[in-house]
Length: 140
Ligand SMILES: [Zn+2]
Image 1 (cartoon, rainbow, N blue to C red):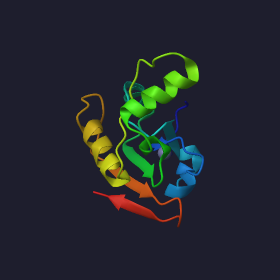
Image 2: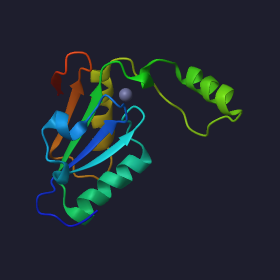
Image 3: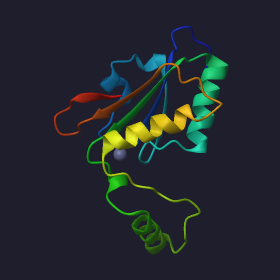
């Protein structure tokens, strides 16, 4: 992280390999902080990173970017727990709460970000990227 007058945007996106957030959003890679996790969920760590991006560097735009065919929507919360337990022998301390419709997931994420007193959400945008046709749809 470094000071930059060009840096304006923090992006919260899914970690899916088909998603290249800065390219999809048409942002110069040097002009964004990109926070990624499985599903692009609003986690405490995502809020921490976006908060520090705003407070330390002065980014003032948040973009939530999710996509179609997300692997984080393929199982139930119980299904993910069983999957992790079967693969590791350990029950995870976290849950994956899948939401089938990416548009609904973006709206939920935007609502969660707005609810955080740690974030400036005056410039908050949400998008769904279609991994099949490459289109980007704004969610409001
Ligand atoms: Zn995904």
